[in-house]
Amino acid sequence: MSRDIFGTRIIAAPMAGGTSTPAFVTAVHEAGGLGFLAAGYKSVAAMLADIRAVRESGARFGMNVFVPDPAQLAPSAATVAELEAYRLQLRADALRYGVELPTLRLDDDDAWQAKVEALLADPVELVSFTFGLPGADVVHALQRAGSAVLATVTTAAEARQAAEQGVDALVVQHACAGGHSAAFLPVSVDPGSAVPGSAAPATTAELIAAVRSAVALPLVAAGGIMDAAGVDRVLAAGAQAAQLGTALLRTEESGARQLHKDALSSPHFTRTALTRAFTGRPARALVNEFVRDHPDAPEAYPAVHHLTAPLRAAAAAVGDAERLNLWAGTGWQQARAASVADVLPGLLG
Image (cartoon, rainbow, N blue to C red; front, side, top):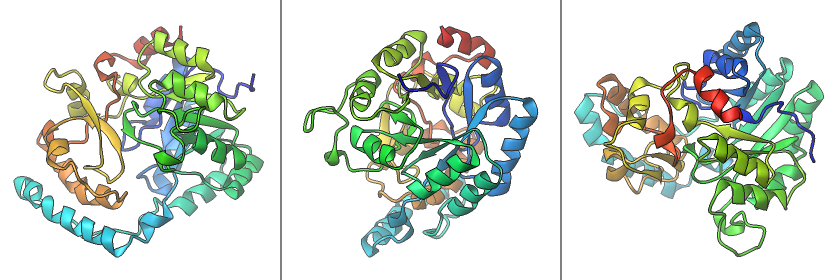
């Protein structure tokens, strides 16, 4: 068995956009889990402030960083045209809220280099990456600085590429997970199965088993895990820990908007779907009017994210859940409104 670098069977997913606050991560630690801060969408200064805040609490934690896609930083003329067309589609929403749509922003790499340099200068115990691989040079530099490095993958093919870069562990995300998909290879390359050409794994446990057969690294299972039975299933399949996001979204310490928390318990929302409507990258959300109105959003992250940001902020300000990005995994109806201290013990087993 691979060495245990987690020390717990429950990891709180890094949820960017304000959900994974220092208070949330600290509460997860105090309840027996391991929390991850999220550097995505934050400045370097804000990332470092979060690190300081959790360190002051004495909690163990990790930091998650978005990997930029070079292709999105130099989009083709066709992609730019698709973005301009999508911007026109969004005018009705802008008029609804009386906000101005921003011009296209095509140069956002989420301060990638500066964040890596900051984490090298002031290392944290665990650093995870999503949306791609950081490169072997970054992996080895962080390891020399004293950090264990995790990569987020969605298929066996992605797992093999990550292993080749020398990472210490993998977060294995199934498509039933809420929020953004971490996929960075076309599904046609490898559906994530141990048998090339076979169907994609139907469950998170099946995906863990497929990745377990492909690489000999510690695995964290992510996607649709909402209770102790779900945790047991992925551990039995070969994971060392389960990563939960949606199950903790409604907790008191979660920094998610109350509008989002309330939507998770509303009978008005009856299903989830993968959508690019809000950010240009597939993400699983509760199906609301915005998702239904924009089924063909361009694949252009984070350019679409910047286009819709003022619309989402305006929707939140007026309490309009129909136009907000309501990230949710497929088991969202089991999410509990309680403190982390109340929710986590039942998951720890």
